[in-house]
Length: 315
Image (cartoon, rainbow, N blue to C red; front, side, top):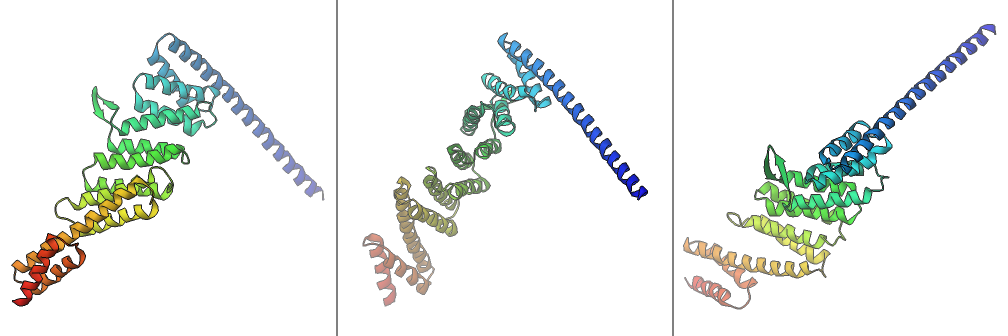
């Protein structure tokens, strides 16, 4: 019994020591936190003084130092915003974008959150439209396609339910479509537009996104020879516009494209028939002449196809 009481006493003493150790650690952390806050506030005051004195470069460096070295201090949130504003004022727009991103990611309770989000969206859109340049070793180069898309993706990520997210996703598709000439970039544009119609089916940008998918596929089919697979995919994309967005202005455009594709298919049938006829492969030629007659409206093409059918049957 005495041994049991002794063990209990030792255990209680150990808990007491642990508790005391925890209190000491907490006290140390609190002390470090207060010291960090004091340093951050001193730096913030010096940055304000530099800014008021017109020493913008100095103020920018100090605000950045506060955000990077004292991110949890009260002065950090305000420093991040002022850092972004000064960078933007100094035409360092890509750096300003990252400063605003720090507010949106680290300081959601900041009173400047909404403005930071708006400024970030504006900068990302300007980059996508080629309105800003990226400085590199004294030279000005256009912001890359990849960088523009990454910036717009951040805009969407930081406000996934806002209209800015829909616009950002649409703009990603447009920059790949308009500035990309490679097959890979066309595929990236299609993927971006599909993400928009999937994630934001009721968006004001969705009808045009769906229509642009058809346009891209149509354009791809015209590079070199006409790829029938891409033509079929383009037709389905335009048909999806009619089904999903029947009252949109893009629906009328899609209907016209479908009619044009149908007309093109008839012309191709006639051309294939001509090819086989000239090769002397009469049975194959007749198949495509009949297809032309069956699918075409009265007119020169249909008359010519029917004429060859009558002539070839008599041979």
